[in-house]
Length: 561
Image (cartoon, rainbow, N blue to C red; front, side, top):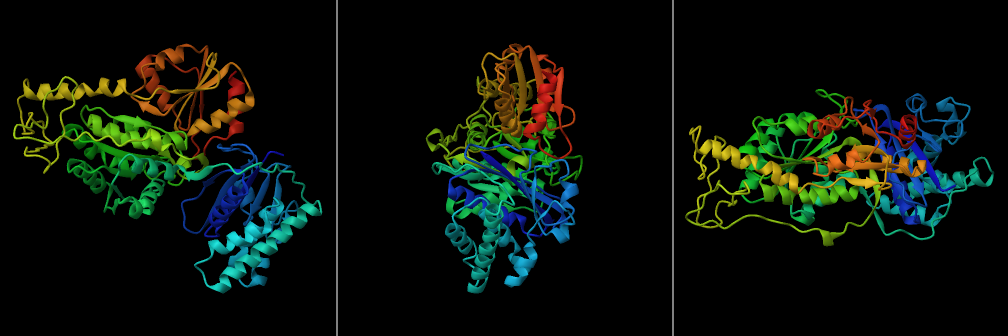
């Protein structure tokens, strides 16, 4: 057995996130490759949330439907996960509480209460899984003590005792052959790090020279903002929770005007409030970097779920015509590099750059090779002004020299009205205002010339081409690997606007095109048709608030082929 799919399920407030944190760390310490993701309800207490963990001797980076071991803390978990539970699923929990004959009885809370407090139930669960997988007992107990090191001595020892009791139970379940597990043992510890999508965006922004972050809390984008706050002291970042999203985007525009490199993090509803700020950046030719973590809409929608539903919002937000770039990372490596690139390109072209993720991506932990910092450099395009400085000087490229107040002797004037080269308001309709519009319009081609080429995953001589963007990358990649079809490949776009110049030729090479998107209408497919005239006869769309699984993608692709 090369891997295990372990799922924890319980109410919000029962601490399954804590179990995930400890187990993932223990698996990594042992040398396994690990992946974990979560789906949760929009409430502080109650409901049913679940966490999926894959443990393997090989790389695992995608979401699967299969559950090998289920640990439910509430009876409602069975109906919540009914589509994922099979006859082969091993279920461990309090049989009396769960009222299910298939459950292998381990009354976590009862055991914890006997030790001293029902809150130790999570440590019991950690111990049981560690015992089942034959992790080193001393390492498990020592790590439990590290986790609770800031607690008083009694709590440290009681949690260790709870984990030890759980370990004994898990070990006995295997030795007595109640459960049969033959999971592979890793040969060596990989030099990888566990990084969430949110961490990858935040670290990439910092690598790109980000020095301040502005946001109003909104799920699921808050995880990037809190990551920035976590790193703020070490990285020297100013972090400000604003009174609303309008303030956040305007502070960012002001920050760039002053020479800073801010990021704004929000979700669809918050970004809708930033529309005027986007247009402000457009006409003032201000750099701007905005991260949008997508969730299902309209309005509040399903605020803690996932969807690739805001591409059109990112593409068309803002009145008037102005260039922008939109990145949509599908891996943590892409997220890190594109977040850095966003700052350099926003600065270089003086445009808004949007980083488009989703709830699934930011809330998932990936086993990731260390980021290659040799590829990273901070590119600043600020000039020292002189007395003849013109903020909006007409240039062949459409990009004017960008000065900042106080750096040089020139006057840096910025106006949200149409303006002349000095930045002064104008209503010269056929003269300078037309020249300014045409100058800004040149940036469209300039940005397109430097867009990211989509990545081909699979055979170069493909006949069937799966077209995707953003967070669906890993699920499709694993589906292709498992199908082992020498004629099928994926074309993944990590930059969804502007489209790379090779897009049309890469699509036309295929005999059959399959669009995969986590939204209801195929928004990216519509953009491709608008830009290239190419339509998709086959679309695999999912929009119930959950991410694709590898299995359902395999079934869907096989059906089309």
